[in-house]
Every structure is written in C-alpha cells, then in structure tokens.
Amino acid sequence: MKKFNVSIGKLVRKARVKNNLTQQELANRLGYESVQFVSVFERGHSKVPHIIIGKMVVILGLNEKKFFDLIVKEYKKELVATLNAGKTSMLVKPRVKTPKKNNTNVTPESAQEPEGFQDAA
Image (cartoon, rainbow, N blue to C red; front, top):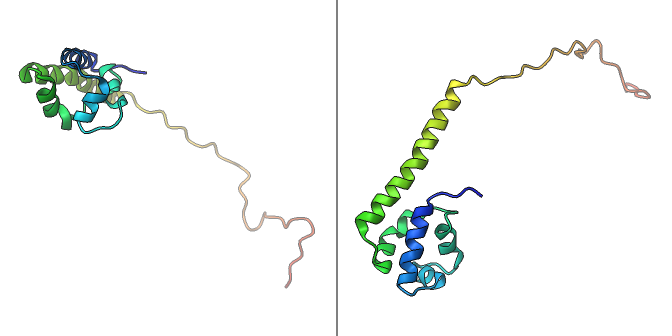
C-alpha cells in the first residue's frame, strides 16, 4: 500500500499521545465512530480530511501555522508528481490498434441458411 503524508501522521500521533488520547477517543471527538479513521492517517495510508483540520488544531493543541505549512508541503509533493505524470502521459503518443480486415464479410447474398432451415414462403 502506498504511503503518503507520513510526516502529518507522525505529527498527529505525537500530539494525540501527548494529550493522553487514544485513537478511539480522538476519532470520537472528531465525530467519527471508528478507530480506523485515525489509524489510517497516522500510519500514512490516507490523507487527513480537510474538513477536520481545524478541529484537530483545537483538540490536539497543534500549532496552526506549523500544521498548515506541513499539510501544504506534503500535498504539494503529491500535486507536483500528479501534474508531472499527466504532462508525461501527453508526450507519449498512444498506440491505437486498428482491427485487421476480415475478408470473410457476410453479405445477404453470401449468407447461407442454417442446415434444416426451410423458408415458410
């Protein structure tokens, strides 16, 4: 599994432990029921949802500027990589396979009736 935003996860974990909160307690304070919500971004397997960044600053007593700058730095790396991959993909001409000509085209004149078929005319 690809890891990203590991430094953000480490910062959140450090602050959570410093505040004597379990992952479950932090998840609940953020309005979530599952401990996995916190676990996945602490381990770098998911991004911290933007909607909870302000809540995390308050609950964990994070330095707002430091947290914001770290998020921007980490997301910038990902955005630059995505941007470059998109540009690179446009430089390579896609190879389009054209279907081979089939010389056995069926026309009404060449179609044969199935064996045992009788026209009701």
